[in-house]
Image 1 (cartoon, rainbow over the protein chains, first blue to last red):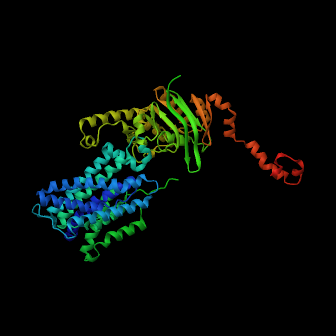
Image 2: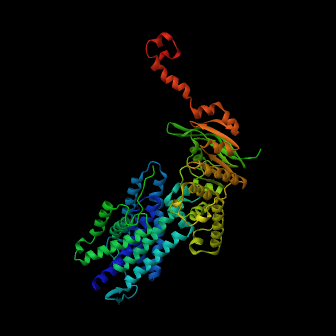
Image 3: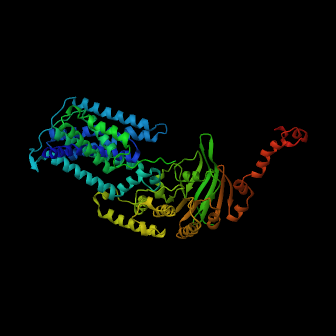
Length: 295
Length: 282
């Protein structure tokens, strides 16, 4: 039992990171039905920004997280502007073009980081002394508390933003009927940019948290994390914000439980096995609405 | 005669080889109820989509007051004072009635994103004002009792009314109604006609597309008729009703066509050739 509780704690911490990235996937999909595959790389850039701030400016934990979020926000806006907006404007570009452009943006960003930093893995300097607390037989580290706490805070903030602000309301309207929303005076380009910015900020925060937790930052770290977060978004029901959180936590738990069951060689396979299963059995995901095509 | 608020001059729109709107000129005057009618596929909704910037005309100009609407993106129109409803209802179905109407007021908000995130006093003041106006718009359409319900749970007639409330809250100068009576029963239609008059009486100019002749002839000041993308008549309801071209467009040239189609069948034997009638060449 204690063992199970322990794995739950570990799974929640890992799952929080996936959930933060998955939120970006799901929000962008909800609004323009596009998968922004570059979120994994934005997460990687977040980790490197945090690392850079700590190494060169001796930034503390909070500055590192805020700085990384600010930088990835700008990066997300640039990616949207350069890789997606021109395709949205062009009449000839279909959905497939946007998807390929997304993959291209993703490869570009990871390669850029290899050029800037080199392919080596860098450890994250110790920002504060890690400690373990024992809770009902399971031990939870300060790092895990940090990850779960910061993630929960950001998710609650996002929920309040989407539910109670004018911009959030406009985003929800846009996700239901973009043309009608535009005719009500909602600036769709601006809303799409804000959506990219929010998703990128969350991914940037996740990057710093992951860098601290795993004590490892490298240019290709975004690929696997991004794909697993995508699986999490699909599991939860792509387009659904609570779904992304539930999906992220479940994928994290599944991965940790798999490792606990001595299947660590298969660690990366669990997320994708779940993805395939969901697509076969319930493509709309756990909390997603089934899509009815209007005739 | 009052001034022109909306003016279409020689507007043409082609979709590839199909001419959807063909050199249409018409105007809407301040304070009137103006109707546009015509058979299915005549191009009526396309005219609305041209006015609201969904399509851009290949030719011609559309002016709103002093301003050209050519090239104005849809999201700027609400701010200019044009609001519309849709033929196939397009509410935000998973939002509450109140939220739907507040989206309609979106263009009227001034506070930026920062104000909204940090809930600065000007933002709160503005949200309160907008909420008040949203209540008024819902009450005007008789929907204030249901403000918290989701739009998708409303019966059909009330969804149509909610669309009008959402359009009214932006305090437009010109309201475009795309088949507002579609699918309504006679009682609902009578109530709708009353509502449209009340909207006009608040100073909003109404431009509507409608199929129901009782509604159109009952409330419109002037009626334009479209057929195959061309304007075939324009005038007072009584004039349009008597217009031979309009009657033909609606009832078809059925009588003549019927004869043309049946004649060869009847006349297929040599008799036709001997008869030397005009159709013999067929």
